Amino acid sequence: MLGDLDHETRKQMVRAVAAYRDRWGFTSTSALGQVPADDAQRLDYERTRAALARLNQVAGDQVREVAQRRNERRL
Image 1 (cartoon, rainbow, N blue to C red):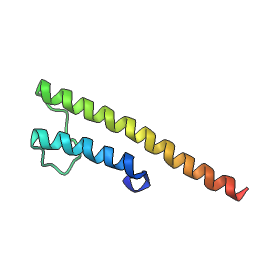
Image 2: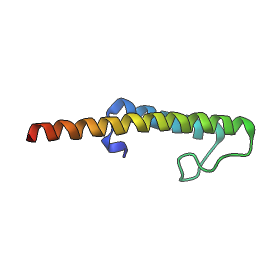
Image 3: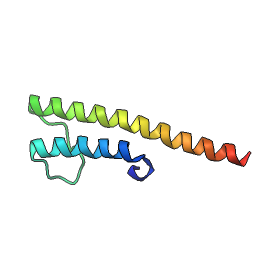
Image 4: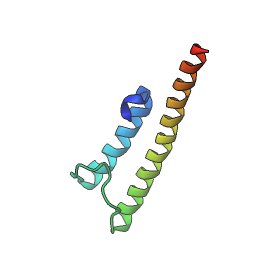
């Protein structure tokens, strides 16, 4: 999915995940892993997850916009 994003949105997604993983020393292959039990880490987890959800919405909008422009050119 990252390949479909514009450069700035991709950077924002990578930064959000990298900041979370760096702060909590997270090394799993999963982007955010499971919901943590620790309150402070869970708050960061939820913030990062919400930011990714917003960015995914932007990404979906971008993909739909590109597809719409392609379809308009064919008509």
